[in-house]
Amino acid sequence: MDEVKEIKLFWKNGCTRCPQAKELCKKLENEGFSVAYYDVESVDGLAEASFHEVLSTPSIIIVDGNDEELFSYRGVVPSYMEIKSCLRA
Image (cartoon, rainbow, N blue to C red; front, side, top):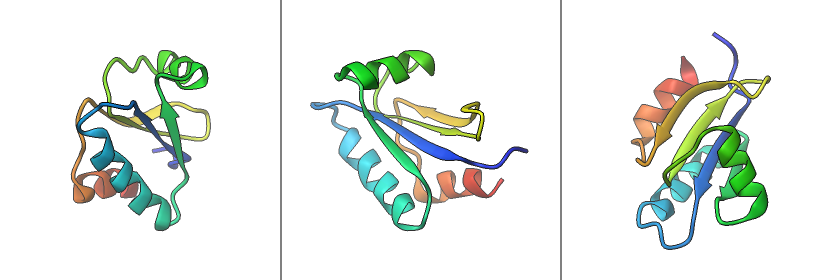
């Protein structure tokens, strides 16, 4: 399996689950993982969301060095242990 390059979080204001997703990603970022935050209501965020076919928030997408999707959670917030198991895979 390819190595994890980056975690991408797609969020928007007013999303009730997005604060929990941001908290999870901040924890992962503090552990040394690269995390990019995309507000889907911004031009750049919407463009990136379109590229990854994100239709709901929050969405967490884990990509490799070629920006290929390894794992994704769309419209849900995974548990810390669930996402850590993906990052170790």
